[in-house]
Amino acid sequence: MHTDPIRNSRQSCLTVYHAPNSRSSTVVQLLREMGIANRVDIRNVSIRRMGGAGAVDPANPHPEGKVPYLVDGDTQVRERGAIILYLTDLFPESDLGRPVGHPQRGAYLSWLFYYQGVVEAVVAIRFAGVESPVFHDSFRDYATMLTRIDEALQDRPWLLGDSPCAADLLIGGPFATFADMLPPMPPAMAAWVDRYRELPSTRRMDAEDAAG
Image 1: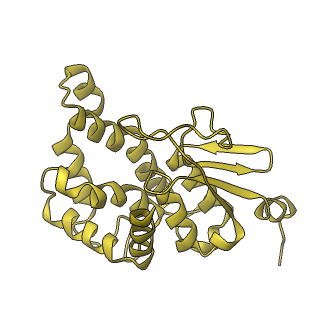
Image 2 (image 1 turned 120 degrees about the vertical axis):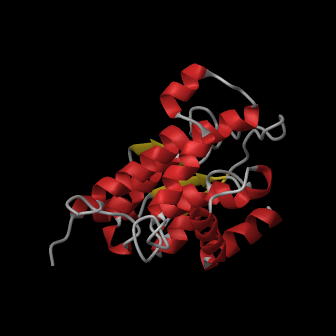
């Protein structure tokens, strides 16, 4: 079997900076789904919370004091979509990502970047109560975003097929967490969020976040 010495040397020095009940919970959940959480140094840090609670932790190397933040030797990765792509490419045997050459690679990348580039922005501006034609022309609106996700789930239980991938964790998490604060989802998407909630890794992460 061919062994990649660069990849193997990096496996022992992966560090993820995490704050309970925050965006970084998605990455910790992914590490468990991938079966590599025991090979990663998960360091809990404090962060500044919405509303002003908490404080930036000087032990966190993220330039803005946010989480998640991944350090792999001399490589540092920020933003959930980028971290998820980095991890699933580094450990393709987990089957949570889609490696280069896979027929679903394009769809996988598209969902990761759709979340980072559209979903987060559209949800945030809805919470802020802001209406802007400039924003709409660039990102469309909340209803359109729901429709795009729902369309992908019409004939399959998960975004890319019969089993969850890392993109399901990234996109499904916020809708499960904030369902009571958001408008109702279309049927296929609502059923998908229910499936996400029932994943053992989701249940464990929810319990830990509640305790944290």
